Image (tube, rainbow, N blue to C red):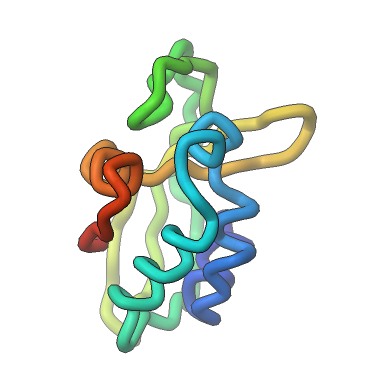
Amino acid sequence: MKQLLDVFSRQDWNVAYDLLHPAERKLVDRDLFVRCSKQGSNSPPTFTDVRVTREVTEHNTAIPGTDVSQDSELLSLELNANGSPLKQDMHQYSVNGQWYWATTEDAMKALVAGKCFTMQ
């Protein structure tokens, strides 16, 4: 997960796309994802002091925007975003030994429709 936060901080949207769950990548065009991510990232946060405070395996977690479910690791994170403390829960999914992330249901709906989304 720290790798993904580093990718977001660097605004490396091509790598973020590569780390997106394969079920979501099948439905989302890379160029659209990168273009939309750039539009919504005028000043992305820098993440520091990332700590995983809890890790729980969840079974049959739905991959947003797809009909795929699989086990995931729910990570509770404490970190600083541009110096401000933040608590965040995130799922990560293992596919063939590689960890992936999934975007939100709202982002997937927009991207599948060929539109940009707003990151929250």
